[in-house]
Structure formats: C-alpha cells, structure tokens
Image (cartoon, rainbow, N blue to C red; front, side, top):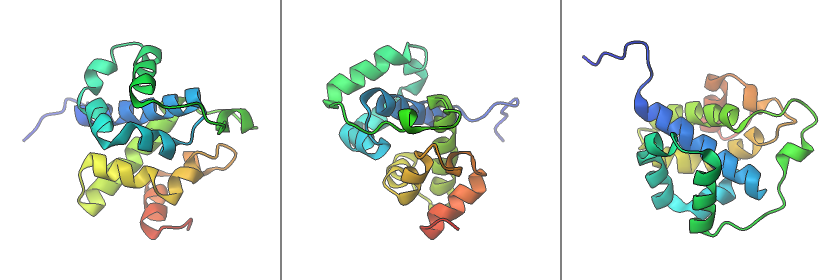
Length: 154
C-alpha cells in the first residue's frame, strides 16, 4: 500500500505543470492550445512531463522560451486573454482544469497520460475551456469529463 501523507501523486503535479506550461506558451505566442500541442509534438510533451519536476524549479519564462525556440513556435493571432471581459484565469488555473480532465480521461479510457493529453487538447472541449468568456473553464471536473466523453456540451 502506498502512503501519500496527504500529498497528490507526483506525476499528477507533473501533469499540472505540463498543462500550465502549454497554456503559458499559448498565451505568450498568441496561439490556440491545440496548435501549441501540435508544434511541441508528443515527444517534447513527453519530455516536459517526464522532467516536469526539474523544469518546475526553473523560471517558467525561460523554460517556455526554450521550448518555443526548440519547437519553432511562431506568433499567432489568438488572444483569449485580451478578449476576456471577466476575470482572467492564470495559466496555473487553466493547467489545473486540464490536469483534472486529462487524468479523468486517462482513467476512464484506460489510456496513458500523454495519449489522453493529446486527445483532450484535440477535442471540442479544449476550445470551450479556452473561451474565457464562457463558464466552461470553471465547471465541475466531472461535468467536463462527461462533456468530453459525450463529445458535446450536456
């Protein structure tokens, strides 16, 4: 039996950091999250996830610059932060939303974390979460999972 002493599994924190970094890069480059995921590719995302405990102790600005450069991510014109008329969630807030959803998808669909991440960011729900003028990003995690599984807003 694994003792957790009130702490979450370290890999869940690594997923949280990975999703937060994706959001940070997307905001910085003004790209949709799915476009950042595509540009990073599965291998880089897996590297970020595997080494998240190391990257997390570094400055996120520098880490994001390194991955933007390495992946050749060009500036886009998607600015959901500028378009937001309400309180803007932080990249950490959105990272937590994605972490919970990806964790749920991985469990329900019996997939690895990176495969679940890839599928979530390529689903309709990612566009909904990234619309900060909607209520989707602060909905209950189980509701987001059901919407994902139904492939529609329910």
